[in-house]
Amino acid sequence: MNTTDMHIPSNKVRDIERYFHTELAGLYPDSEIKMFVRMLFEALFGWTLTDMLMHRDDTVNQSDLLRFHWAVEDLKQWRPIQHIVGWTEFCGCHIEVDKNTLIPRPETEEIVNWTIEHNSKLKIQNSKSRILDLCTGSGCIAIALAKHLPQSQVTAIDISADALSKARHNAAINNVEIDFRQDDILSALFTLEDSRFDLIISNPPYVMLSEIETMNHNVIDWEPHSALFVPDDDPLRFYRTIARTAEKHLKDSGNVIVEINEQLGLETAELFEEYGFYTEVHRDFRGHDRMLTATKHIE
Image (cartoon, rainbow, N blue to C red; front, side, top):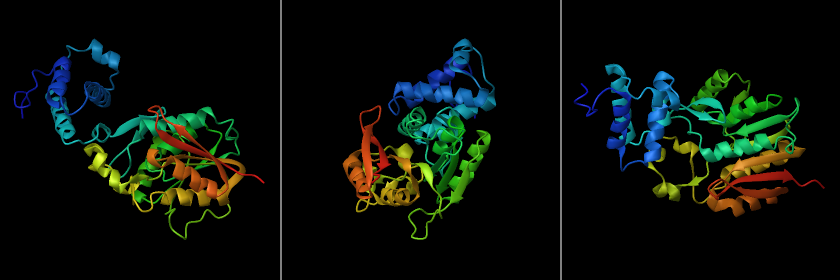
């Protein structure tokens, strides 16, 4: 396949950018297309945005030109750009992702940043502090907390062996130590023995199956449904398990932080209150109910 076949005017950087905008217009917003181009140049050449601006008249070889072409074709099929380049940035961490893990969202990053900023209030600021991340997936939450709160000891659990393999790799490339465990937290046999934690945090599956029609193809066609969806007749099943786990394994001064379905903020809060927690629902940067914090009710 030559340049003409690909409809790319030339192998100059400026023309590659133009090719992306021409081919993807109407499928993605202009700002998102610019982000795709930036991420691909960073992945292929290590270029920053400044590098791209300085080298707009530079050329790339035919092999790299083909990679840009196939990236455009993948994007037309709604393949996530993070899968194309193989990674994303999350709270200053390099997180590799694939079909077995969710791509970290800005809302999750906001929750982790809030946790880091309030670490003193949450009492996770010393070397004895223990953090438990349930449904860890790619490990992004656990890794970011371990990196930014290096004095804490972090345990992370997921049911998927494939996801945990990726999470362990991500921990290694970010130079953090995490105790990863494979387990099904919904199982009646799930146990943490006598472990006690200062913080239990989780971004569990919470999207109701009835919501699938409102979701983008780059999510429903490419990301693991087991990490996304819950049945409409029991949408809080993971939160019930998290609340029970926290009731038993959270220290008296500890806290729970969970990402939630914006439609079920009140119901999620009421569930935790049934287990003896004080709760507060927080809105994300879009104004949606997205995070719930829960503290133990101490008699």
